[in-house]
Length: 90
Image (tube, rainbow, N blue to C red; front, side, top):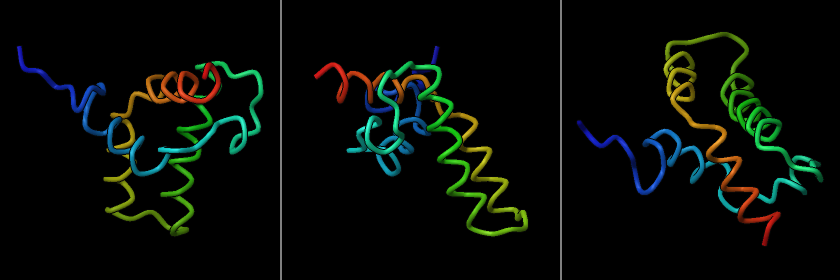
């Protein structure tokens, strides 16, 4: 069986999105969530990343479709758990 993990993350998409979009963000400050729940935070993270892509242009494009397909591979709950562990439980 092939190992599809990447730098300790579920996959490349999860690692890269966390690194380039969410690294160093305290979810309590940036998302106004004081009582963090993995599910709620994961949904907010996904919405934020999709807005970054979709708000760039009003019309859809091939590049936007590819970017959204890339985001579909992200393990949002893993990023949310990582943020909660780093910022809330610390």
